[in-house]
Structure formats: structure tokens, C-alpha cells
Length: 345
Ligand SMILES: NC(=O)c1ccc[n+]([C@@H]2O[C@H](COP(=O)([O-])OP(=O)(O)OC[C@H]3O[C@@H](n4cnc5c(N)ncnc54)[C@H](OP(=O)(O)O)[C@@H]3O)[C@@H](O)[C@H]2O)c1
Image 1 (cartoon, rainbow, N blue to C red):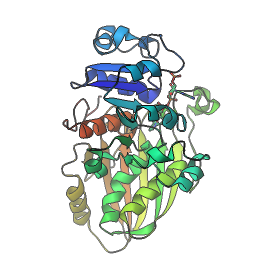
Image 2 (cartoon, rainbow, N blue to C red; image 1 turned 180 degrees about the horizontal axis):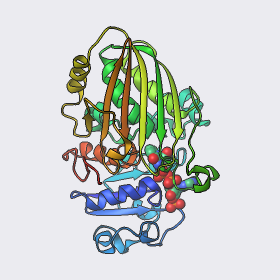
Image 3 (cartoon, rainbow, N blue to C red; image 1 turned 180 degrees about the vertical axis):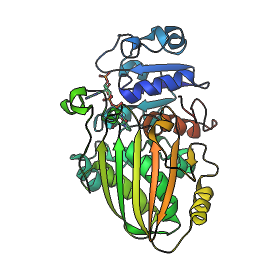
Image 4 (tube, rainbow, N blue to C red; image 1 turned 90 degrees about the horizontal axis):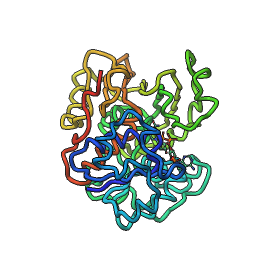
């Protein structure tokens, strides 16, 4: 099968490239760049061996969007900035399955999209075709989707522990989500706020409450499974690590429950999900799922409240790993093909 990666020189694009080079069902990869056509991939990722690279990438060089169109890929991964992505990947819609890592197709409602991203949706007609790609929850729709909107990293880590409990009508509507992200979540372009001198030994909250775009994405997915509207206060923080995400969520319970009830609910929803790992007696740490496509989840009951803990690698389960998981589901491969459950030490 042939795959194109739009935005291959970015953080998520390069992680995708590594996964696809190892994926047994992918025979050819077209790595696309808008600014570096003709340059060698090794300029961006010297860690990939030329021998391995050239088995699947012709000449080991970055290609143009037109090259990708001519090669008629079966699947196109769009790892581009929001608003750019919908413009560029839409051209592939008739002939390829699209998996978009940006936010462009994640929010169906045009007004909500404009509220979150400040501009009208770049392609409202195509928006209607998109399936939200939270693999564990939308697998049936993903199997026949032409356009998969891969979720954001914050929404993935927030939604996976919350959805089963909301679906079982266990939680009150007001939910507080505190989230910590590694710096790679902001992409590779140079910004003063991402520089080492600013970020090392430094941490801060940003766009708290209802101000962050991902609050809208999280809320619309939670409201999809509840009969009432949730009120989400989402508090993201930047922490001085390269990759990794830690989410701590606090919610009030509607009824008294015990640990066995919570365990039973997670077992009901995730027993067959290879990438959701329920921990019973410990709080997950971001370092344990780095380089893996896993989401680790645990909880603690505190009177009439529950605290939920979840961790992912923002570049893997939060982006490129989940995108490959969605490709596997869409094309009928084993869900785990080419992906790592355990990551690396
Ligand atoms: N980083 C994460 O943890 C993460 C997690 C979930 C989702 N996402 C989403 O995934 C998408 C890619 O994220 P990323 O972190 O890989 O971004 P990135 O590191 O900034 O890379 C984006 C790539 O897009 C290309 N590009 C094309 N047009 C561009 C333009 N007008 N401005 C800037 N870049 C342009 C650039 O490559 P060329 O110059 O070679 O074309 C660039 O390398 C984003 O929409 C992001 O929100 C990221």
C-alpha cells in the first residue's frame, strides 16, 4: 500500500515516517514538504538509516504535493498546521483515504469551529464527511471513513478516562481537567515561547478555563455521550519535557460508588483495547508511555468526587501513533500493526 505524508518535516510527520517505514503493509511512502522539496529526509531526521529509508522512499528525498498527487496514494496523512491542512489535503479526497492530524475536521459545527480557530471552516462540505478518529470510541465508523479527523493530544488523554464514566451516567456535569504537556506539542517552528532558555526549569498554565481550543473539542465529544451539557474547565500547562502528557481530571459523582464499580466499567469499555492500560494501584507517569501508543489510566475516589489520572505520549497516542492505529482499523489490519504497546526504555 502507498502512503503520503503531508508536512513530513514536522514533529508528527517525522514520527509518522518512522512508523510507516516499519509497517509491513506499507510498501511506498511519499514524504511531502512545501519548503524543502528535493532535500534529503536525513537533513531533518539523521537518525533514520538510509538503507531502511530508501526501501520505501524513492531516493530518500522530500517530494512536492504534485508528486504525491501523481503517485495516487491509498492513504494520505496530513500533518500540517490547522487551516492549512484542509486546503491541501482536500485535493486527495476523491482518490485516497485521508487521515488529518490537524484540528480542521474535528469540529462539525461551523460556529464552534470559528469560535475555536478564529476563521470560518476552510471546507464545510468536506467537514460533513469526517469521522472523529478517537480509535477506541469510533472504530465502527472509522472502518468505512474516507476522511478521519485524528483527535488532538489533550482531547485524547482527557476523553479516554472520562467517556466510560459519563456513558454510565456516573458523573455530574461540571468537570475540571488539569493537563501538562511536553514542549513538542507546540510543533517544530521556532517561537520565543518554545526556546530552551524560556522553557528549561520553567512551567506555566496557559489559556485556562474555557479559553483553550481543545476545551471545545473535548466538550463536544463528552456532550455526544451524555444527555445533558457538560461544563468543562480545561487548564493546560507547559512543562519542561520534550514529549509526554499528564492529565488529572476531577469530577463529582452522582451516586456512591466503590473501586470495584469503576474497575468494572473500565473493563467493560476497554478490555479489548490494546492501547488502553488500566492501572489499579498506582498513578501513571508520563515517562512510562513515552514512544508507545498507550494511554495509562487510573483513578482515586475521594468522598463524592473522583480523580482520574491519564498519561500518553503526545506525539504517539496523541498524534502519529493514533493516526496509524486509525489506518489499521480503516484498512482491516490488526489494530496494533507497526505500533508499540510498551514503548522504549
Ligand atoms: N505536536 C503534537 O504533539 C501534536 C499532537 C496532536 C496534533 N498535532 C497537530 O498535528 C499537526 C502537525 O503538528 P506538528 O507538531 O507536526 O507541527 P510542526 O512540527 O510545526 O510541522 C508542521 C509541518 O507542516 C509544514 N507546513 C506546510 N505549510 C505550513 C505553513 N503554512 N506553516 C507552517 N508549516 C507548514 C511544515 O513542513 P514543510 O515546510 O516541509 O512543508 C512543517 O514541518 C498540527 O495541526 C498540530 O496541531 C500535533
